Image 1 (spheres, rainbow, N blue to C red):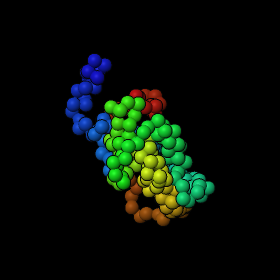
Image 2: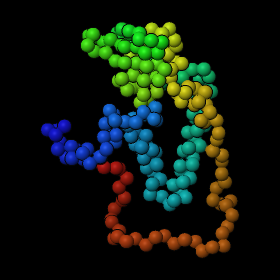
Image 3: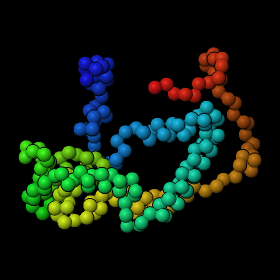
Image 4: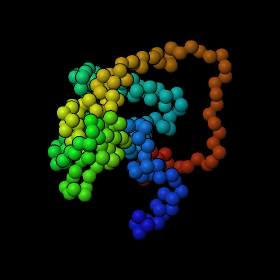
Length: 216
């Protein structure tokens, strides 16, 4: 890393390893979203409203959330209640295809040693604690290929070992409530207070259109 960019090394040294390397990520969240893609999507959604007055911005957010919750609620109604969500099922299928390459060696009812291409390449799986030494199962809550090899050897269903947060019943419960409609500003009660004045600019106004495209 130092040969590629010493500045990056200096930045990493100032931070806790848990903030930038997966080897130190906490397994408490059990989520497959280990990147900041959600922040990027959120920023792009509100781009048109970021320079608007605060009420306009909040109204934009309210509508986006209302529409998103409705879309997800209707989508989940088409899924099998006893299943996992489709994207998680795709990940499971991918892991299941890879699991056939591994040989499970049973230690007891819950513990397995998974052998890879060589007897010197192996991983430890604990089905009771739902952990694998590769840490992917602990981080995401989705059985990795090594865990699936152990689950199959134990003659159990892979779906039983997926975290409940990925189940369709959980997804439906999350989106069962709705953000309700609101009247427009023309029907809001009038206030007897003086309207607030816009803040006075502390910097000189720049000419030209305000830039919206974010710099990378």
